[in-house]
Image (cartoon, rainbow, N blue to C red; front, side):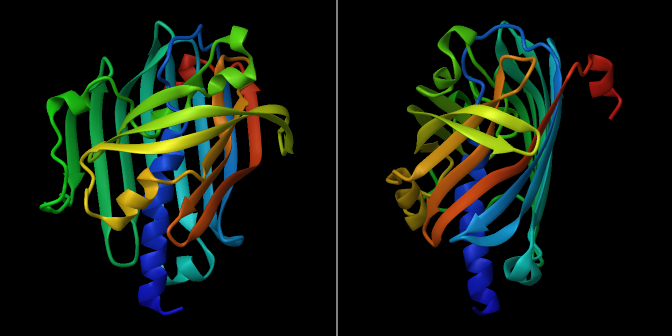
Length: 284
């Protein structure tokens, strides 16, 4: 594999997997109080069965607020060639059983370039966006309007999903998620594919299995082959695990067919510590 090919494959995987990973579990419906817990998870990232890297998620939530941090790094051949890495943080509140993001920031970098996206949000809408360096204008990029920046959540806040306890674990699916990542607006349509038992470091129990569809709305490149591929993709799924002490669920496995093979992001560690407080959230 040449360095150029490796960079191309890494970019394709990052583009296809990154947005889906962050948006499969959006908080888009009403639920009960979030209660309190902290989450510590480690994910292994692979493509065609070969290790690509790792991602770590740490988060704290209580009845009123949440904060989530994510750090990812490419390893092995791809990591050595591209130097791929990324990090992000999101904060927000729980209002009437819904997630209401207040801030979002993510930085992605490789050996040749880097980009930072920052958003301020409130009431389910984007108040301000800063992307540095700016995304290049392209003739086939579908224009964004103010409507596309309302009634949305950011990709990192999407790692928390409220569920109604009366529906059980399986109720986590069967919904449409509305995502805005600072540059593009898209829907993720989830449907239930049953449940299964899993055992991880820190977790043993039933998870919801969801099938997913990607629906581009605005900000995407309409003529780009990857856009068409993902819009027609039927091979996207996610496993969602309950966060003990709360009415939230978080992904423990995501599988996405990409143009260069199937990528899998799977938790090797999923630990929950019930009882985190708002004070803990503000100490970071």
